[in-house]
Length: 253
Image 1: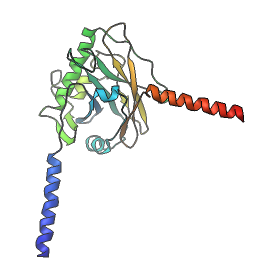
Image 2 (image 1 turned 90 degrees about the vertical axis):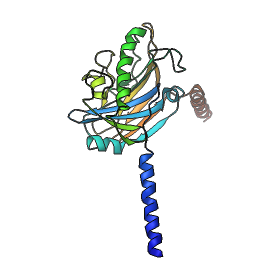
Image 3 (image 1 turned 135 degrees about the vertical axis):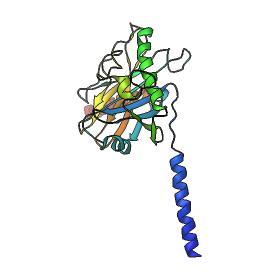
Image 4 (image 1 turned 45 degrees about the vertical axis):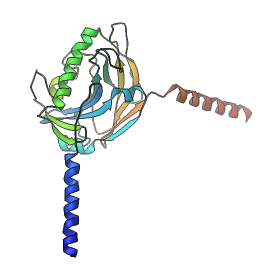
């Protein structure tokens, strides 16, 4: 009887494990931000769906452990020479995220403590060319060539449909990390065994516009991708009140 119970328990654990594996999904929705990773000489790219851009517009923070995915694809969570970026787009005329051909792009910091200046936007048609590259990458992540590694995490063969649609991240972003010459500056950062940081900007279409700063992405040597949003006005007000209180206290002393 005891043996039977043990066998049933083992079978139950195995079955639950199978269900957990089958439950892993990857579903892309228009307006989601994608975190993408590639490395020269690797056979695969890593793509992670971070969810709707609305979360980043509203100032939500995020921390995501990608160590297992990075290790699975590149051999190490902090492999030197892994290029990464975060990007997204609006390709409809009625999106609550912004006007059609709005872009969400990262701009790598040369100094992780200094925020980048915003970049100029392009005309709607100009940014539409960038959108077409991003769409092809998003389609590549949902294609039959993609392999699910975890919930909202996939690996895609680097040579997928070179020049077509869908494509891999490597193909779509191009060798210079500028979506094959359609966007400047380049969006990619690169790991070197330490924390790297990239600013996230929302680029509303229009040659007279500049990017709106939404916050900062960091990727550390342990494979943790985090997003630190722009503080809300109420947070700045609280910080200012605290500083004033400290100054008043010092004056009294």
